Amino acid sequence: MQLVDTHVHINFDVFQEDIEAIASRWRAAGVAHLVHSCVEPREFAAIQALADRFPELRFSVGLHPLDADKWTETMATEIKAYAQSDPRIVALGEMGLDFFKANNHRHQEKVLRNQLAIAAALDLPVIIHCREAAAELRAILEEFQAAQQPIRGVMHCWSGTPEETGWFLDLGFFVSFSGVVTFKNAAQIKESARLVPDDRLLIETDCPFLAPVPKRGKRNEPAFVRHVAEYLAELRETSLETLAHQTTANACQLFNLH
Image 1 (cartoon, rainbow, N blue to C red):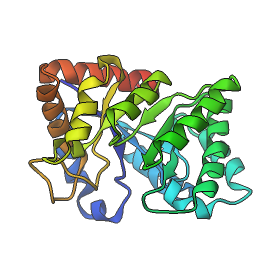
Image 2 (cartoon, rainbow, N blue to C red):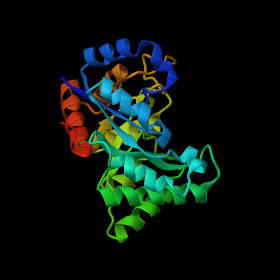
Image 3 (cartoon, rainbow, N blue to C red):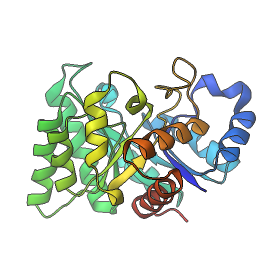
């Protein structure tokens, strides 16, 4: 049985002392591929070095919405150049809108549009972070669609309502669930997780954050994606093997994994 953790941040300092042991654990848990997300372009060299070290790692490049103030006039060129520089880059991001933690809404939207334009030009999927901004994000994606620049990608660490989930499914997006779906008070997320079609479902850890039950409160790591898979299989009334096979196939399709 194979699993794909579609969103990790193992370049963070909390992993550096025992990264080899962490890799041994994710392999023992059946994690065959990992997609490493990028918070800002200056992480690129460190993430690339990790991909050199761990052949199952693929990665993205982009600017997180909470770092939108770091956007410069040259960053679009920089992101595009990075994206074309390494065949192991499988997406742009993570990008998006976060109106929960920041109030620079219009600037975030500008930065997002710039990155979506790069993704459309390069025909790469996007990794989307969206918090308290689903309506605004939907409108922007619909603008690209209307301009015949359709965007494909994943709503990562999804926590939206069932109605919002439907919006992004209608736009062709995959939806990825993290350990948050295992939390006792996550009723809305559980409801959304039940309605995502089999062929649009992805799983992730978003490590080192949001460790799933029964590891909640600990440092999250890729091996724990198995707990997310086990919980979702039970929630969706299917077997772990079936869910693992489907989410792995979905990840391979979206991110062109081999």
